[in-house]
Length: 398
Image (tube, rainbow, N blue to C red; front, side, top):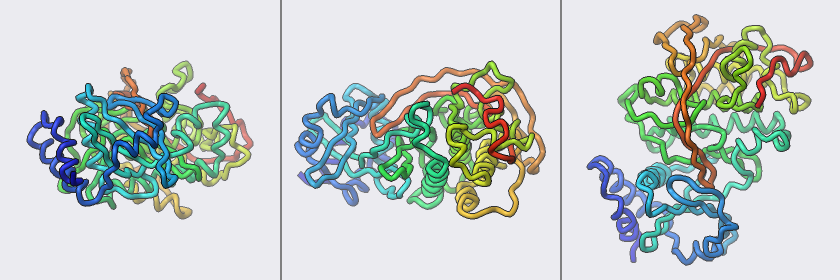
């Protein structure tokens, strides 16, 4: 059976979408037939020891993910589509189509497809060092990520997003950038994963209106409140991840007993007091470069500004991280759901404030590693001082 015919048969059970979705499936068939490798089901059965439970990496709305090893020695992660998940089918097609042509050092690599009767599978490179959240937010593991590694992770994520936004075959908005969707390989190189909610972005539009989907603590306010989706939504999420990497704290589980509403606001207040270095995770203070820490705090806050027009592009972020900037504008107060912003405010002007709104989140994990849900964000701004003075400050409890 030819690869093209296999891909067509793979798509037959998924024809309950709109005509627009149908055209996406046709695009996927064409791309897959031309560019992707077809794996036999027997190959994947052998690679995963018959999908043995001990090889299971995780499970999400689409179905389980298994670790495997091919005969040529390559380690793989096999995502198996659940036959009973309509949402999983949609995300399966979406992820396969978007990743079919994506090839970048900082984006997880889709190796190919497999279909066997009603079984449909995607095959990825296996990324060995788990997801970022499983190291960063565990007190007994976070020291594995010293400052040098964290800075390189920040730079790697930025390069991956730049590729997706500007350098891939089409502009791709990930929509769910967060610590659990960043995988680390054996050399600690970060790879952006889980494209089930990603969207292609029309080049002739400034934003699109779409159903809100994302994860608690990472979503941009204009997206949560109005469904306005642009590349600047990914920039906001990236900014949150940057501040989490610096502090070792999780924005969505920030301790509300303190005098700030969330991690971003806490970092902003320290920035305004010229105490950016107090944002740093004390467990890695001895390994840190003070100038890099201060720069990353400021970049994180610039990326999480309320007005999306004031957030830098990922190209500018990559440039800032690759060379020492002579000057950098001061960020305005970050945004959060429930807040309003005025477009195109001059840098340095403060934006209006309102109380943040709460929201629920449901999560799902995949074994290439991932998690998904809905709602809530918050934010604020920063600068620098010395690593020795009050390293904990008034630190949130993570």
